[in-house]
Image (tube, rainbow, N blue to C red):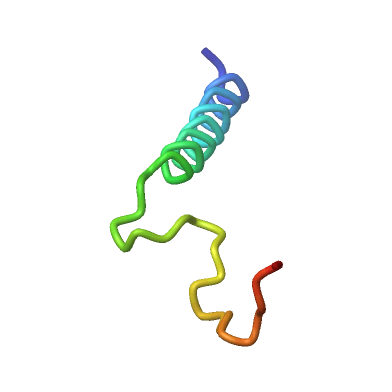
Length: 51
């Protein structure tokens, strides 16, 4: 194999590992009971429920 083909395969493998890591991290369950995109630091005490 020539150098260019090896570099293409290497870059493809790195990109595949990166995407796989992103998918793996997005599917992991958080241990603190909070979802990935929640706003846990927001104070909801001023919000009144609909009656």
